[in-house]
Length: 426
Image 1 (tube, rainbow, N blue to C red):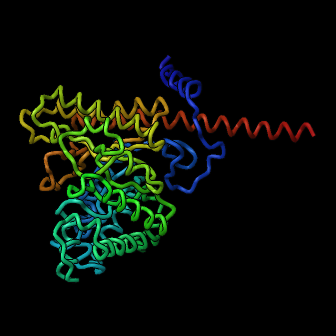
Image 2 (cartoon, one colour; image 1 turned 90 degrees about the horizontal axis):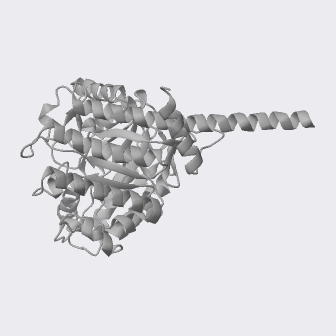
Image 3 (tube, helix red, strand yellow; image 1 turned 90 degrees about the vertical axis):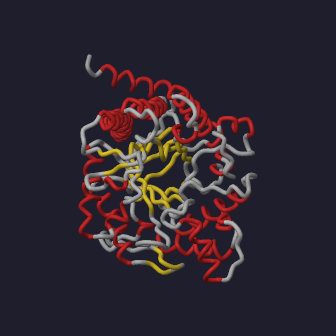
């Protein structure tokens, strides 16, 4: 009887949904998409993971690389399979790119190490290529470079999305990163299956054009660029999930923010492989109580999961979510409630064959990283109720993957038996 829930779930998946798994079961280790699912080596793939923007920055100092190794080790011990991090640091202190087209090799070796360590621990990476915000340079640094180095008259940081010189800087960075030869693995980034996906930008925003046309054009252009260089990897835009003019009936779900993005239109771009959504009720609906924030979160995710399945017909990843201990009246129970809400909705979608393919909490820290804690830090090495919630989700998604693998194995067995039967008959 202890296995009854497993077989009951198996029956639901087989009888109620069209489970599309590869009978051949082969693969080359790259995560793909098929319809509304991620696929890995012929089977549906689910991501329970984390954000850790600091990985490259920390690994650039060889004496600090053990922290990156510890983070991956702790993540793997809790069943985590995907990490999202920065493949940028533009200008300023300890940059990757200190001037347009000029790179700090020591910082690049830090990113090489991150990819190598992720590979050793069986963790896939989502690498973001530029920031919307000023931290680590971002679009503001690109625009400033164009002003100071090329005499461009630019009046807004949003000229990042419009100015040909600035776009040229970004295009060069994309080409440099994708074609990078990893000094640890001996594999070019664009050929490394450790990388799950590229992200065009962390949380793109263009408030100077609320119509959404500027962002739409930029994503279309840059997605085409990435795919012209690298057809191995998935690509996503880095969106937070705000609705725009293509679905005016949905905009009422947005918090009071108009940032020039459009969840539906942006993710319908053919070269964008999957949708993303971010969740920060404590920032977006600050004046409300905990119950109202959880209600917002449920409605926010439900709408995006439905739209991913029926409007976009693509997988969706909750690429950032969290709750800050700096919030007024914070308690660990509140954080656990938010994590449970997000992760249960992922699990409920997954067990029904839906499009929600995982979630990445913000953010993972490890011992010695306390100065990086922005209020959202989670240290898996320290026993906590939140760490237990995360590990339980990993186990539940593992069981679903196990079910899919069993279905695929049964189909392979039936195909092999049928083939032998045919040979005997002749």
